Length: 312
Image 1 (cartoon, rainbow, N blue to C red):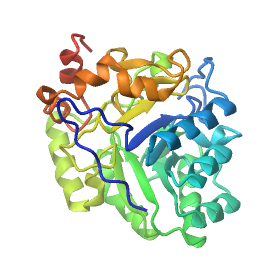
Image 2: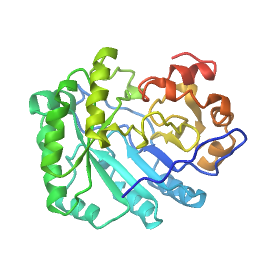
Image 3: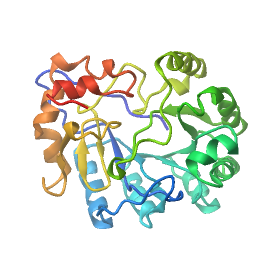
């Protein structure tokens, strides 16, 4: 399925709803604690999540990009996905594949409103598993096999580019090609509540130029974290991030406190935050059109932070 067309924010324009919401359904991972420490925070419950889906439907949200953590660790994951797709809201999610069963693969194949991305951190076990945990590479390949054999031919292989794997982009594309999948790159967003940096630093400036050149050759891999062409950002205009606790951020990638609009629980819902948050109103101003373009493909957000009087 294709993502909806973005809406371009203009001065004085108050979009009734974002076309695309990134939803961090959980902070939890299945990997070992040595890689991703546990986060003891209260996350939104099933009723609150289903209430959000109803609110998205009433507002006219077209697409949910479910991220994490590993979203499939939630026992109510499919209940939330089914609630959204029943309302004709597109749902995309990223998984490490460990919990992707034959039944789940068939479920995805039979639902035209669901997209799946399989996480891959390297082209080999030696490169992949130090980041994703023991067995992660085999789990990802097995998930790709299940999807392909179930008739899911339009899924994506999602790669977070790091110093460790940047030289393996061709090899990872070859893995995706085996199953007819698209290669999609995304930027690393550190687990905000652990206080820990990302496992590996992203490529340096000179190395990133080579990575971008290779991304252009892959076509679909040039799509950014929002699924929009490079250089176009809808942060606070047609896209935002809701984290697992209900905090709402203007940028789908950078969950920095300076980009925090509020919490859906204390604000009595998402719609009020989206429509009346002073932060969103500021970012929708015409004078801020170039802010997100200047962040370097959503890897850096210093310019956005500076625009709201904060520093990273």
